[in-house]
Image (cartoon, rainbow, N blue to C red; front, side, top):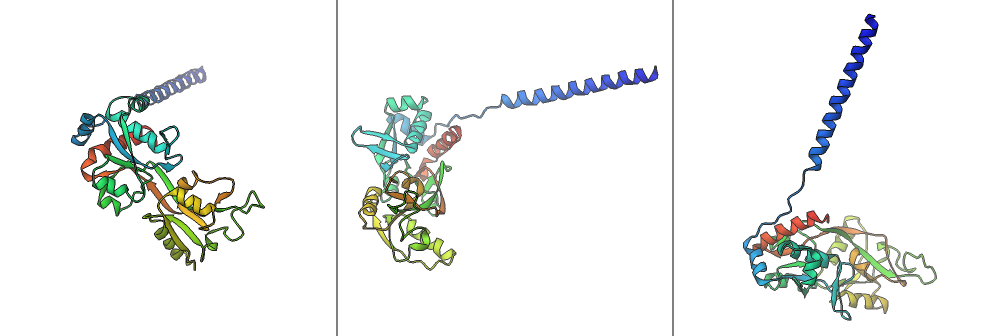
Amino acid sequence: MKQKKLSIILAFILVLLMSLTGCSGTSTTDHSSTEKKDYTIKITDDIQTIIDRGYLIVGVKTDVPGFGYYDKETKTYSGMEIDLAYQVAAKIFDTTPDKAKKEKLVTFVKATVENRSTLLVENSVDCVIATYTITSERKKTFAFSDSYYSDAIGIMVKKDYSDNNSLGTGKITSVHKLDGKKVGVAKNADTRAHMLKYFKQRNYNIAPIFMEYSSYQQLYNALKDGTIDAFAVDTSILNGYVDDGLTILPDRFAQQDYGVAASKDHQGLIDAINIVIDEYGY
């Protein structure tokens, strides 16, 4: 009899513990599910200026497929950075990105490696979203958002036409084969400095001949016609130009983070952009 009562008591305690554990788990889950981030932006003076004007002015690339590209035939902009610009405008004007695009709440200005800084210094744009790498040196002059994309420098060369799976021509299959070769880089970009630093850190005895071009299209054309042996720039940019006759080598160096840049007195805009970057999961 005593043994039977003891079994009943133990069973009762077990049920009670399971009930308490279940309640505790449910309470925690419900609590976390109700937590939501506040994506509201503050209407600072610089943002109010944009609202009063009626549109956001953004410097963007026009020759980087997938990021910032302008189609002359359709007269339309496309790419991830273009989408980000519309998302920022939508946040400022309290609407949706689709409506921001339809209502033309963003005016785009062509930004190149050469003129990005000038656009900001002269206040020709509110911000620049143009594959602009965040560096400590640039942060001394401009305000930068959080990173919305990470990339690294890559090298594109012609394929060996006898082998569709070729890693490159017989002459260039890796960075080790670049000694004395003509490497095309974008004018005013820091690609050359990054490459030389990479070679020095690894004690590579490599001395390419660097040739600067004003646009990525010019670099692509120079590689195709043999004026240069390799095209070096951020891999995200190379991906927009690679074709059946070209290949990107496996080597990667100088990890870089892209950020939105604005003048120092546009910190309110940068804070709003950070909220957008977080909200859309960049």
